[in-house]
Picture 1 (cartoon, rainbow, N blue to C red):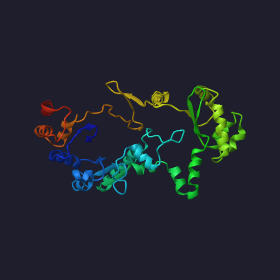
Picture 2 (cartoon, one colour):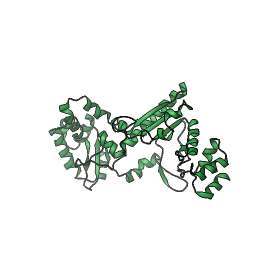
Picture 3 (cartoon, rainbow, N blue to C red):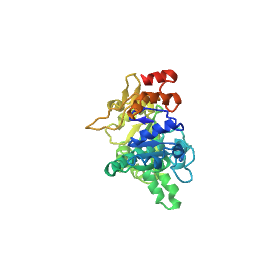
Picture 4 (cartoon, one colour):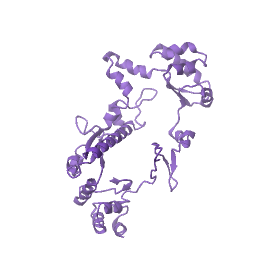
Length: 341
């Protein structure tokens, strides 16, 4: 359990004292987020219907793989399984599924959950009534490709594969290998990008194909670009693209991206007091810049502080630690001594 950036950590909710502590903390909370399988919170006694009786303004967000109800709700799953069912699992150049890519479902789910929590908090502030948010990673992943899904939903059944082919078949939305074995990515479908790319390359005759649908025309453009880009190194091509107003970028590894001059200029890498480096908060407030604590609290590091703020005295805290209802950062007599001093 976390309160602000303080870690109270392992409360044993099957222990009567641990449950009592959790319920007291929830009574004072604005938001509760839980991510156990559907039904677990109710069995433990911390479900929304229970805790809202004493804290009606509480915003309670339950994040699960497939939601609280219906056929897949009890299926155990991490991100690749969710993406597989949501149609978002990436594929490599051979069309083979890749299960080790970005955690799209988790990212989309967490950001969507944040949006829902913030909306519910505003409502709670205005009305005094909180809400329960059933946040499914599957739902969020399914919602993460609105352009393509919108076209698929509204295309005749016989044309669904054509819609997918159209998206995968555009030469100006693809990656190309360069002479040094590296890759660049073209990322623009606009007419102006086709003109700015193909005219200086000496093939204005391909512009009509480049802005057309998937098919033989796009294949002609892709073949030309494949043969062209492999004639120079990546750096040489990036120099060539400079000032030409074409959507293009080198394909970087994560390590290269973290060390990119733009990331450094944006101060996206920060260093804590121990010398460990972290990716910075990407939210930029002009009036109140973010100041994120970089040190991650140890499990149970702030048990004493959090429980004292909830009204428990040193004797009670020591009893909780000794009984196993709560955990301190160290065990046994040292933990009790630390908590009671």
